[in-house]
Amino acid sequence: MKKVRSIKVNVILNIMKTVISIGIHLITIPYASRVLGASHYGKVSYANSIIQYLALLAMLGISNYAQREGPRFRDDHDKINAFASQLFTVNVIATVISYMVMAFLLVFSVKLRNYRMLILVQSVIIILTTIGADWINQIYEDYYYMTVRYIVVELIALACLFIFVRTPHDYIIYAFIMVMAAAGGNLFNIFYIKRYVHLHFVPIAQCKEHLKPVFKLFFVNLAMVLYISSDITILGYFKDSKTVGIYSLASKIYSTIKNVINAVIMVAIPRLSFYLGHQLQDEYKHLIQKVLDYLLTCLLPVVCGLLILAHPIMLIVGGSEYGKGAIPLSILSVALLFASLACLFSSGVLLLYKRDNVYLMATVISCLVNVGSNFIMIPLWGYNGAALTTLMAEMIMFLISVYYSFKDHLHLKDFLTHDHVFISSICGSGLILITGIIVHSAFHNILLQLLATFGIGVIVYMIVLALFKNPLLLSLIDRLKLKFLR
Image (cartoon, rainbow, N blue to C red):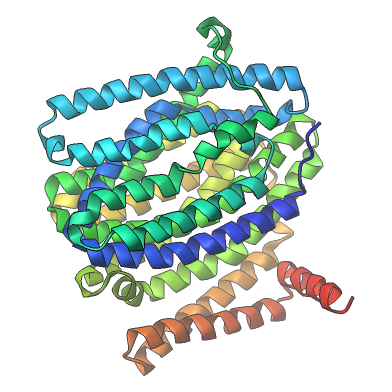
């Protein structure tokens, strides 16, 4: 039986990865957006939005399905080997089909001809994701390896960015470096995952039992990618590359923060699946409550901080050329609240309880609203309209996920006992907004606005949490006392 680290260690590892990720993105995003300019930056973003659809076709719903089912029998060597090989076989077949679709699009689509080289370069991520089979490491909660691998690859990519991307004409090199940063580490997986499973191809007949749930989750992911990526794709159709570039930077800042927060949630998914698979309902409910408490305590101040600091963030990260992206970033900061909470209830409850039909319904409705609204709002309001449609979609996903989670699986009264966590976070976040308004009126320098709002906001928020006796803060203080007074 493989040793699995505690959920606390996994969270700490993920926090380390998160902090490093934020630091690297704070360097790469401003550098790339300034060096490439809004037009070339927009080209890379548009081509990437096309690749996301093709990558989704290659992966189907395999990663989600593996994380849900794999932890339930990961200690059975024969069963997990058969399971992993069957999913890998399906994955390879889907990858071949994905490349065939890409070839068809590049030959017959007039719109995509100008992006042909970019799409070919960025398509490398598809094959790297397939052969890497990183979902095996997620089944075994091997976050130590994934964190170390991530840090090494990101640092190499960062060095390559500064060495090889020096002018706007280096946008194709930039695209390749970003592909390697995102999936280059999967090359190590070819050898590493052999400690868990030995992958081999099997007859497709042996994979039949997985096809229905995998395809159902594929349609969920397709709808999700559509309502996440359709704004950039449709914006590129109606507007110029510069407009796409401005919105892409705001969207990338939003997506980076969202992915960081959602990564903390996803760390808990294999353990939640393990608890449900072994009928440990009390442990499951305790863990999901704990994740929700952490989420509210960390998410609300981030949303308020991003809302009040949208303009200085866009100027500092992208320069004056990207200043107009402050309004869409402000709108997306509100969407962040609904997106992260929806992630917890959809992935942590609906998906694990195998409510795939509800999950699919919620995602499809959100997708239809988003895509349909994009065709109306983007021609009228450009990137502001794109941000509004994302907010609408995230709200709908949140409402449906929460409704069915509490209707069928969770009890609201269990969560109301932790209302002081929510109240303390609301009050503290409100004071962050007030702090930001005061700081903005006192300082005109955008860097001072950012630093002062962040510094004072953190102090004010911690004081409020302490006054309300927020259990997460008190627990942290107790652990620090034990560590330093030992």
